[in-house]
Amino acid sequence: MLEKISSAVSFIQQQYSKKPQVGIVLGSGLSSFTKEITIEKEISYGDIPHFPVSTVEGHSGKLIFGQLGGKTVVCMAGRFHYYEGYDTAAVVFPIRVMKYLGIETLLISNAAGGTHKEWKVGDLMIIKDHISFYTPNPLVGKNINEFGPRFPDMSEPYKKYLIDKAKAIAAEKGINLHEGVYFGVTGPTFETRAEYELIFRLGGDAVGMSTVQEVIAAVHMGLPVFAMSVITDIGIRDEENTITHDEVLQAAKEAEPKFAAIFKEMVTRL
Ligand code: HPA
Image (cartoon, rainbow, N blue to C red; front, side, top):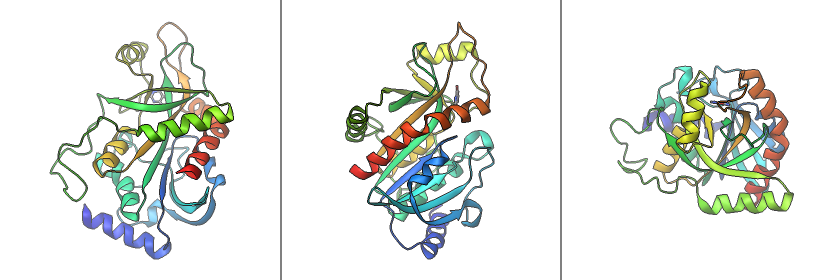
């Protein structure tokens, strides 16, 4: 694993020599955030040694390097999901690569289903914690001590100082934010009505098919994480809740300007 990471890192450093300070993961339908970046280099996942290749529509599959808010950033346009058939090591591979490229903070975004009746499609939710019942833990197997300890502490996976920063930015900009618990599932099915209800009762405010494994790998390596969900559908038991991937992408696209305003300002203030 360490050798694979170091060969991916050296390949990237041959193409782009600046050290990125911030890593950004863009979720489904949020790729247009890259227009905020003064792009200096793009590298397709397929060109990077040992990088998995994204197969999902709405994920363009490249690392984008450039300047944003006075910082050098590396942005993943497209991520890897367990439901695509990758093992967890592949899912978290880019996170480990970004850490070894030198990032000091990781900002993650995703599209997720809300479980509250009064929430609206297009709302944003700061992730303050997560529950992972269904997604296999990426640290299963022999511990790689170079990354971090065997039993990482998970009492604050989403850093409070980053959450406070996001709240302050949202208040200044008049953007309404929820704060809640992200419930990680494998997908690729969306939840049944009974499952949405279960997730709600267990304390899940939003449910999605990504993020948790990336956050675990980042926390393992001591990387401060901030994450935000764009609520692309509301899954509640008593009402019509059919949902398609196209609707998720469309909703994310519509919410993108609000999301972009917050992420850009977060980077500026780091
Ligand atoms: N469930 C799981 N994943 C999702 C959802 C959802 O309702 N919406 C977007 N990603």
